Image (cartoon, rainbow, N blue to C red; front, side, top):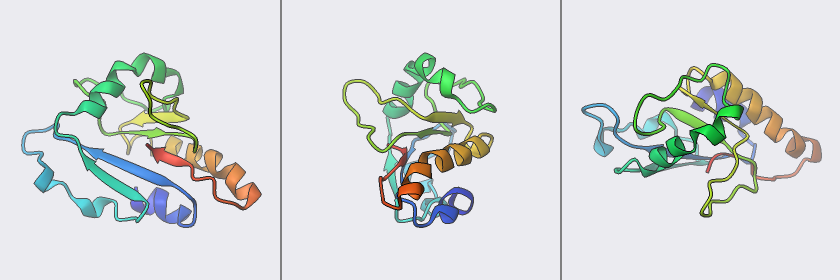
Length: 137
């Protein structure tokens, strides 16, 4: 993802929030590879209880219409190995904000993510000013 999505958009005002949690035996905070996403715009979080993934799984019906075409139906107790793309004004309150698109697995749906990032950045590029679109907030 670093080379295919972030590096080509080096000057774009993107923010990436990577939320990690254990899904496989052997997954652990001390084993996650921070070198996967080294861009300064990436913030890493560890969610031991899988709270974020569980909350998104509960809202899957609302998210479903904007999924990437190659999205795999989640089969776990939490949405994981997924991206969620938001507009710049997305804010978390009691309700989760609307997403531009989402997909799972990330590698399987990366083309949709790339197209939707470019579509989201289009107004910023046209105006030539930062509007801070976010990938996952």
